[in-house]
Image (cartoon, rainbow, N blue to C red; front, side, top):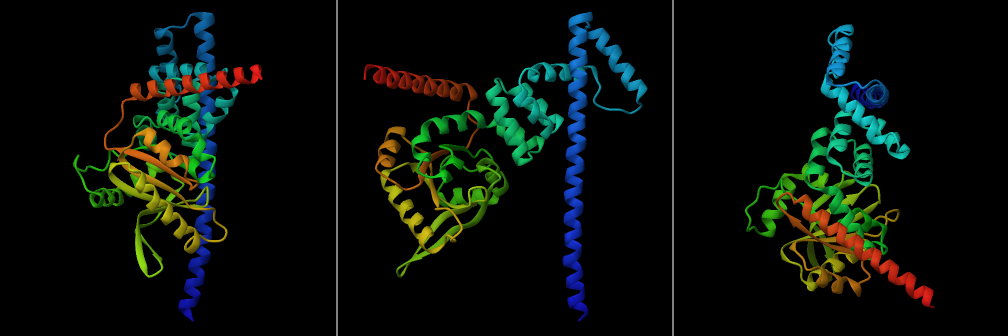
Length: 343
């Protein structure tokens, strides 16, 4: 009897813990918003003073000393940080859409995005991502280092046709960076899979925090035979299973048939009635985009082909590739308009 009472009390206590944690999160969020508002207002103040009264380094240093002497032990008001507040305000003051997002993330993450993102589009991408996933400063820096913005934009440009087949594919990209695996350049599929499992938190960060691991070498039974899916994930936002096949070689068209078989088995025997159809990803060492296009063109399965690399990519190379893809898309759009005019 006493054990049952203790168990019931524990369940009740868990509810209280949930209430406390929710309140703490709301309080932290409110404090953070007010902190960002303060930095914004100071940035506005200093920006105006620089323009109207020609404030320079010496005056800002005096301002910094005054604030710090007035509030003993206060942090965040060094001359360098005050100049950052000015830059912060001037970067976003004319963009109402982005200025609303700033209050949702920490000052440290704001500084990372402001200093490293080079366009409003890139800033918006990382602001939304940080707010949605509640990134720590280290997690955000990793995403910026891995050139996530450029990789995502390139994936969107290249995979748009295939993404239309399933909303689940929108959560996948055509390239992944697994620099954290610490595996030899020549490795086997088993080594790759085991390294991913050993570094699961970082792997999920690369894929997205909405993903969770269901299992490795996940067994499905079809007829009298057992088959194993290398990795089976679940996307909480899209409510679907995600089957991942690992290949340490170049992509080959026959790999797709195996993945399609697994997706059919998952949808028939594993997927729950309230879940969306399963999607699949072949994660290979290399891929030829033309071969991928041919392989997927006749396939109606919700599947994508991605490559992985075990080192951080060069930002300049991806920026050039993104520009080329966008120019090509613009040219194709103009050709379509001209054909319509001729008609």
